Amino acid sequence: MNNQQNMTSDRSLLSEKEFSYIKDFLSWELLAMKKCKESAEQCQDAEIKQLIEKTGRQHLDHYQTLLNHLQ
Image 1: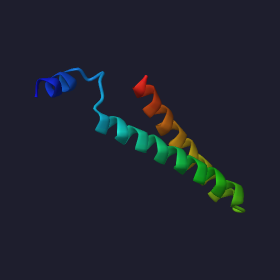
Image 2 (image 1 turned 120 degrees about the horizontal axis):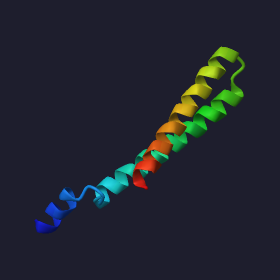
Image 3 (image 1 turned 90 degrees about the vertical axis):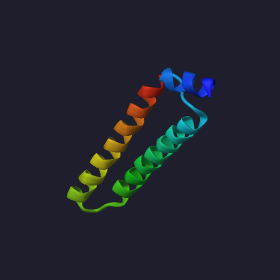
Image 4 (image 1 turned 60 degrees about the vertical axis):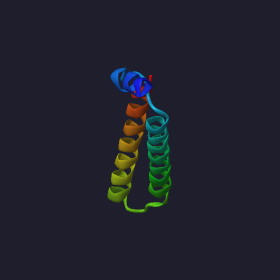
């Protein structure tokens, strides 16, 4: 119990479960970003292509935000 209290009082430390969640989030953002890129390359409609590219950039921003929090 004391070890768990130390982990929760020092927020610079992550539990294994928290770290696993963050790794999953990073993987999902990276996958979403790749899928947006692939979809935009296939898209013929310029307006829809632009929206897909914007969504891909948002996923990239989320990915980078998560990485920044880990540093």
